[in-house]
Length: 121
Image (cartoon, rainbow, N blue to C red):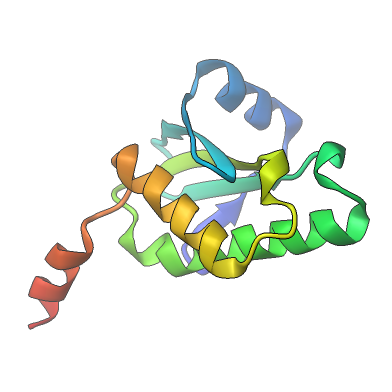
C-alpha cells in the first residue's frame, strides 16, 4: 500500500466505529471518515468468529491485497476500517475483491473505472 498509511491505534478504530459512515457488503464492512491529514489510512480487522488463526490471516491478506489494487482509484483522503464478516471465511480473492469494490463504490470512495480509462487515452 504505497499511498496509504496503516491505521493502528485503538482510539482511531473506535472513532471510526462510532462516528464514521459504514456500509456492509456480503463479506466486508467498511467504516470511513474523510481525512484532513493529506493521506489515507486503512485498518483491517478479522474477528475470532471468522475462524482459526490460519483462516483469519488468509482473509486479512486477501482484504489487504484487494484494497491495494483499488488504492489508485480512491477519491480524496479517508480513514477507513475494513472488517471481515463471518461469511468471508474460505472465500476466494475474486469474491472478496468484488465485494470490497462494490462497497467502496457505493460509499462514493472510488472514482469510476470509465473515467480513469478516459484520462489515459
